[in-house]
Image (cartoon, rainbow, N blue to C red; front, side, top):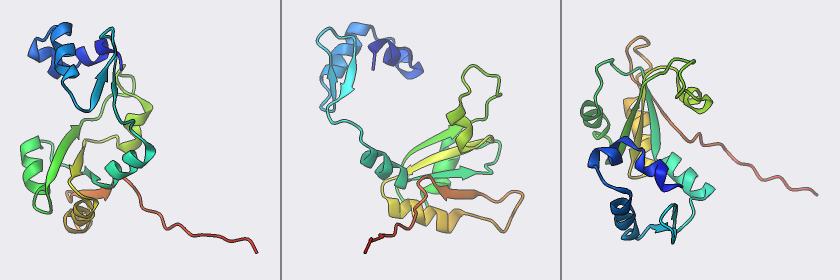
Length: 157
């Protein structure tokens, strides 16, 4: 990833760090490698499809959220069933927006949250305990990101 991309992130900009400071900080990481010229960063261990599936197995999508939802209010709700590692609140964007992409609309065209738990068991418990289909108007909708499919083995005789 080009260092210019990382330095353009809002949180990095808010730190007021120069590129040299950013390179120095990234070089102390045990998980990242900075190129010799200091212009690119990559993972020491590549992010594989297996890693992606494992991450997605620990994540849920929560929809039908109250309009005034905050990270703190959602953390209180979702931490009841397990240890929450991260919450991302996603607001819908206009289709003509420059930032809107096809991948954004694949999850939901309404405000929703992506909640990451410590384990896949906690994510499954969140779906089981927090999904409220009885209240079709205001009930919280919770589902896992990774849809588990039953795999069958076929043998040719």
